[in-house]
Length: 116
Image (cartoon, rainbow, N blue to C red; front, side, top):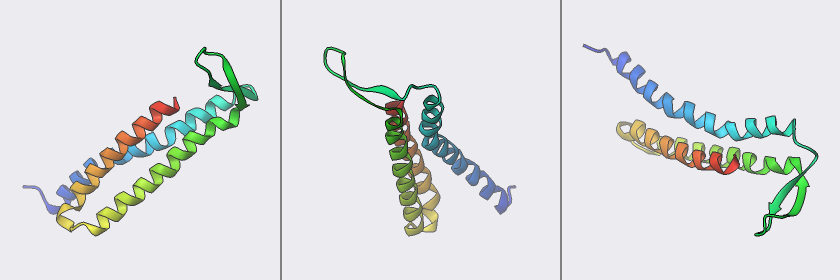
């Protein structure tokens, strides 16, 4: 028979899975972009026209815009998850937090694909 503490540890493990994925997806674009900045030239193509010709050049640091947006949006969503957890009854809090966490992971995955 499981003790009360063991059930809590299991629940924390399941909740911890989405947190690990969430934080990884949140910081991955920044890490990849920071690594790429070390090898990119100072000026890089930023936009192509329909004929696939470069029509705008920009600083390599412009590539940091989307990763920073991912951090801001990911942090705001994480705050929303916390707020919902606080407003939800204790019996539903873990399930709601887990559901919102995995939805957030999906959102961050889409941003990661857009960044890379």
